[in-house]
Length: 116
Image (cartoon, rainbow, N blue to C red; front, side, top):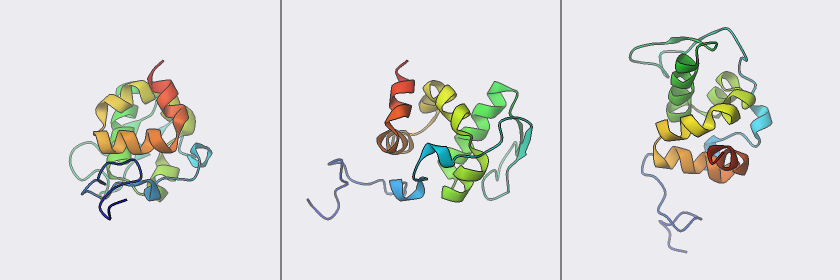
């Protein structure tokens, strides 16, 4: 395989979003099931930074920000496995291809929920 190729046969993202950023399993995602979530400035540097997880639009916005900008520690802290799987069919449309494919390649259960 060429040095620049990804295991999937595609070149890796120049933004560096790879599977090494992800948790080993979705069960590690221990974020809040309910309540308010305040994101730090390094994640939500522009606009809304406090999210009510009971409001689906705000929850989707929170997850979009964390999935796009977060690190492994952020995923574990702010994302909840049940919310992620339940809302993946919508979330996947809000994410760039690199982010979406990285998560779906690592966690096939997301791909299955995204086609439901």
